[in-house]
Image (cartoon, rainbow, N blue to C red; front, side, top):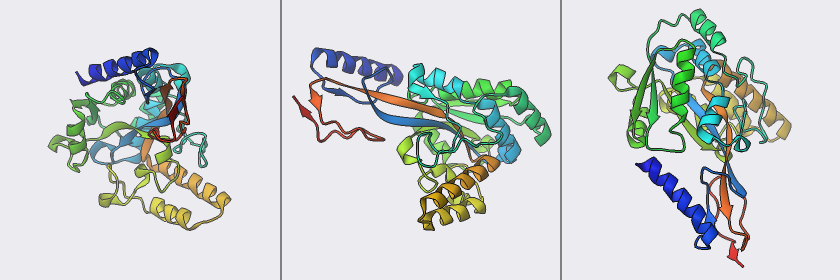
Length: 283
């Protein structure tokens, strides 16, 4: 019901624009007139149980690719783009030197990687929020992509609140834990190694997945202390290299969330993230 309600709200907002009853319809999932936000999709791959081997996590990344997620979740070709960089394409630290991760789904290669890693068919628990329309379709694609590569998938559907509670559990999937969830971030929130939550590798005190990788924390410290732009760029690329080596998470591409604005509205600030509804006036 929530997904249907959101769709109806978006349609009502657009109709209201045409009728002059609404001046701004921010960030709806349809073609619009003014781009106000660039989002990036991603899969957080837990480091527990059957995904504790980095090679198996890498295989999951190779299996998933990007295009199918953009096609399914976004649906409007001109609003999505491939971006295999950990940092959003078009931003300062973007780097598409990504080694084995091409952003193109390759189930045959993923199967080979699973065999080399000794994957034993242990189910991989994939969580899907059924009531969050902005990302609800992503796990459906992931399930298909992973199964095509030879993963056995335990597909768990739940509401977003339940997913958040389960995501915090460090138990094995059989005891209520998880292996994979998918989400989306506003690009402005993940443009550097310090703001990207997925690069928090402090083990039990880190981000969900609880990766313990001292190299990432050391490099992030260097990045924070460095003042020269060229050196920061170099360190960011090294951080990305380690992140792909350890498979911290899988970038699934980028898309634009458009907003519609009536022609008699001026002064709108084009910002990354949530639209700022000040400095505006109705002419």
